[in-house]
Image (tube, rainbow, N blue to C red; front, top):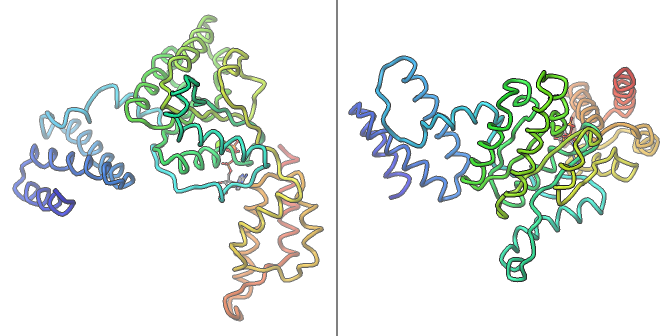
Length: 342
Ligand SMILES: Nc1ncnc2c1ncn2[C@@H]1O[C@H](COP(=O)(O)OP(=O)(O)OP(=O)(O)O)[C@@H](O)[C@H]1O
Ligand SMILES: [Mg+2]
């Protein structure tokens, strides 16, 4: 059946008020969309369907019988901790990083695309990577790049939320998330990986932290080769050594040096759509950015582009707005002040 056939069926059952057949047709359309690589559309439909079912259950309108796999208790619980389930359009060209980091990321992808070859020689496939380094330097972005390059769905899990909300159940919830990810063949991205350390502060039970770490060690040890786990942290030093050893790859995302500052400027200027009013000042501005994260540099530059456009709205010749370098310079100062206060 084509997408149009499904839509015709859905319209028919909707108008006839036949809930059961409507849900069945919608489920089929979701499956069809997944198969035809309309993943985002499938996720949107899936979430519409889940919301509707939740609503009907609470309002008692409909006895819910189908479709079964959307109603599993486990799915509902696990979804509380998954911030997002997404597909990513990000690719290597979106990320500025050092050559060694880029090379390692490329090998990681190559390993995944060559599992058969590696299996032939009984060689393990690297599938656990941890990104660390200061805030705003591309850890989350790199996870999106991996998901985009591997063309896999990714579930984003906030470990901080799991640990703080249901402490006693952290192990159980993590196991469920790993199970869900391997069934659905998605990447697991665990942000705030250092939150495990907080268990010591939250828990009265001193064995709790050990139990959670042991669970993760087991989950890692039995992770199917086709699965991928990406963890990110600003505090590598807070992570248990036994856990750290389990990662196949440890990559540091640093603050940008002058060359990388130029790269993030170039990316932000979008292949010369925008230009500086006084290009001679650029070397000094680059130096001034040292110490700031990619995020802060990009944010201040985008703000100055927008304000320069507003200031020159009347005489934008050929749509090549000139960026007010003085304005950007003062915004860099503000960014620097804000980090020195932290
Ligand atoms: N290395 C980079 N290359 C290109 N853009 C970057 C880079 N680092 C950061 N950015 C820009 O800053 C934004 C925020 O970066 P990101 O979320 O990846 O930082 P992070 O390292 O995960 O920070 P945090 O530790 O606070 O979570 C990105 O979406 C991107 O626009
Ligand atoms: Mg991040």
